[in-house]
Amino acid sequence: MIAAMLLMFAQGFGSNAADIRGEWINQRSTAIVRIEDCPSGVCGTVIWSAPTARRDAAGGGIGELNGTIVMLGFVPASTRRWRGRLFLPDHNRTVQATIELRINDELQVTGCELGGLLCKRQRWHRRSAE
Image 1 (cartoon, rainbow, N blue to C red):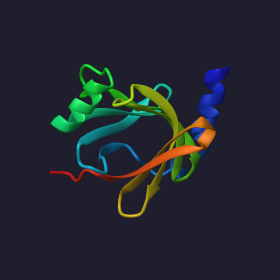
Image 2: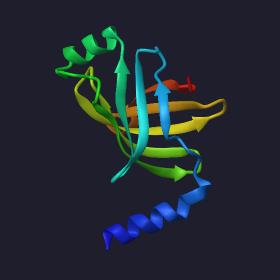
Image 3: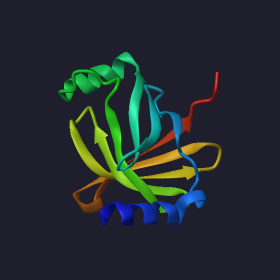
Image 4: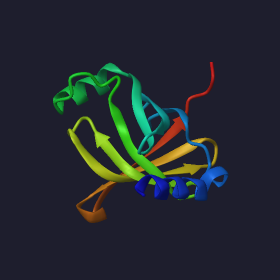
């Protein structure tokens, strides 16, 4: 029953949803996240990180940042916006989040706590093919 509902939900957005799959560089250019389909929606995994990002994650109690899933279960909220959860390695906690595909292959990533009272926003850029 749940699987059928999820399938209907996904088909409802189907080809109308913009494609965010691919590799994205965070705002400070300290991490690259690969966004791809996963069983719970769309997920993102750190595939590269700078030493500063790895130190920050270690300070939060994360042993290895590369390979860590930081975007969990994102599902379409509209054609260019998704809702899910974002794992913050440097704080070792997960927050509610939205991502929005903007112009020029830019993602606006917003994570919120305390029912949306405390939010932080970053702009990520799609990694160009090399």
